[in-house]
Length: 76
Image (cartoon, rainbow, N blue to C red; front, side, top):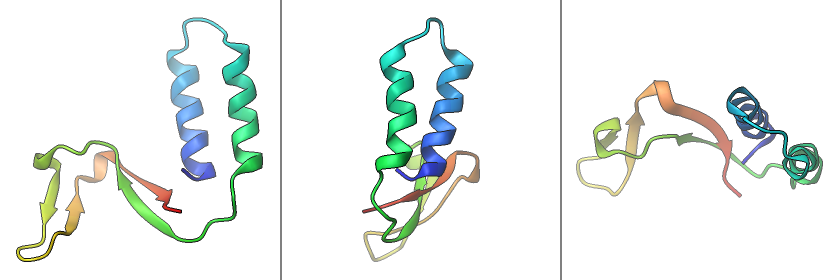
């Protein structure tokens, strides 16, 4: 998960937060500072339902996914 994904998840968490959790705030601050340098960038889909993906006809590959739930992320 890259810094962009961490920022997104933190915003989503704060938007739905029902109580303050100090340990989670520490984690949200700590994670971006301690991530290793990115090696490559990929698109990761947020909903892995088969109806949200288009598969290659002969290879075990996902060619496309619905853009509404795709996120740019780092695969180590």
